[in-house]
Image (spheres, rainbow, N blue to C red):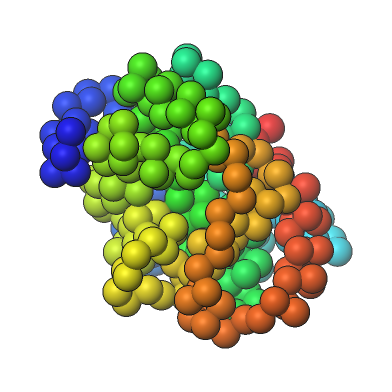
Length: 282
């Protein structure tokens, strides 16, 4: 199977979940200059499960606010629209996909723990590197391995061969996917991101997070997800099937303007924030 066959595969999967309506409506609202906090809160409140989960996250150790935030309107004002948008996407996608299950040895619970761990790690790296919108990087980190999930759900037998190969050889999953499937989770992730009409930078974070080869025009956001993913695997925050810790691309340090000496403070924040953000998975 060649990479240009992936789109046909994804398009043929009629069970592929659509982008949650609440996120689409929220994105449309945020694109309008006359949107108010009330209209945004009204949209989120239409899904009581997501609204309650957002309040729980806002009041968790992930943000560490000294006083309890009792309503969505206050949460929107304090966190800002971009951060709220990231939280809505995180909770709505988890709500959509955690209702699904996969056979053939792919651990869904551990996968989502890894995804949240990468989101947290990438966001903290982004903050350390003064990236403009760390909340967007949280989204990229959460979705970075979404292609693996699609493979596990809709190509389970083929993907089980990948899992077995990685377990026996210890090679990176991206190499095993290319060898066995003819394409990788980054290819599938890009197509899914484009199908869901994510912003270009979000698609790039998903498609380029391994920073393999000579990828041109790599951004700070992509480098933050790359570094965050590696740290998440090194710290054992969930698992998406990898058996070895990936090598950090030296270019990531250069793009982010960070040094090895920054890792100590970043690492401490990751562990604390991951415990708080884990409420997303409850």
